[in-house]
Image 1 (cartoon, one colour):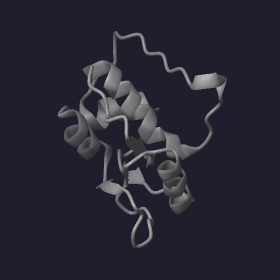
Image 2: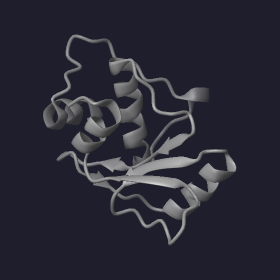
Image 3: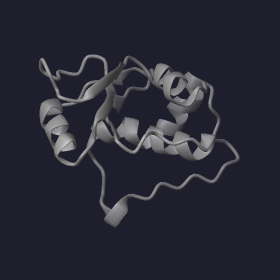
Image 4: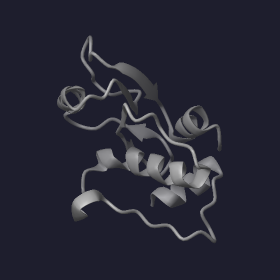
Length: 121
């Protein structure tokens, strides 16, 4: 679904490419908050560009390409800080409290994320 949205809403084709996604430890992902991180990983491999290692990315991607906020955002940010992350990319409507203690970049849609972070789309 994420590949289809990247192609339809951002104009980034993956047709003709072999696409594999491996999650460390064989973990199964059912949390929609992983959508944006998965898209970032796929784009990173395709564009040969990486997201800064101190940045955490999360958010749900809708079929229209909009980025939806996810639950437990404040807990996610606290845990990210504990793990040493210093910046976050998240949906614009995420509830982050008054001072999340991280550099926050809010995105409204997948096309904006692709353009801002990867300069593509």
